[in-house]
Image 1 (cartoon, helix red, strand yellow):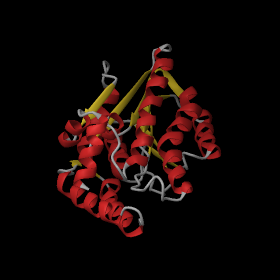
Image 2: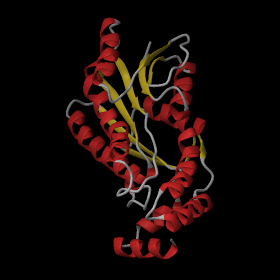
Image 3: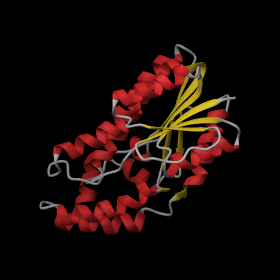
Image 4: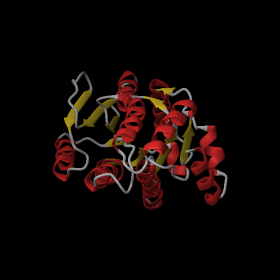
Length: 262
């Protein structure tokens, strides 16, 4: 039986991805900080992916049960709208800890359990390939850094004939996506420096976000990428054309446009 480890399995993309692998005969080891029910061929281990002791506990389980992983799929992450100069620094650090250092810790401690030709998949975001926008900058920083980390890891593991694949999705119908609008609204209530701008940003976000992709569709794509023999290094899925076009402009012009509309 093939084995796959997935982070963030209790909801959203991770939950749907877990379901698809189970249907296709895989044994799934699922990690999340939020409890979920186990089932046939599904082992859940409550794990804070930023806590080394928790991750070492996962490693011990794999070693005790002689499990070699066909793939490690890093999905867990959080989103936060914030001002880089107003928000509490501990709140800023939490996003970096979970979105960047979490996957780094998982891959560092669990790589020894990966099969010689196993794969590591890392779900980043479409913003990882774009210049940051105001108030979404912290999330962008974490995902851009994660994308660069993935390339560095790819260079290393390529020497061992192991693959590192990044998936950069746009808006997906998940609690994370639904919460981003509320987070933008909350920001406009809390900010002192950007009252007017944050309210306008919320209106623009609602207007131009577009229709989110169903999480089941992305989960199926993740499954197909995992089992595919010849992969691209990066998959860009359901991108926002407006953001892509804005990113084609010089940075100075981008700043001028954003300031004008806000």
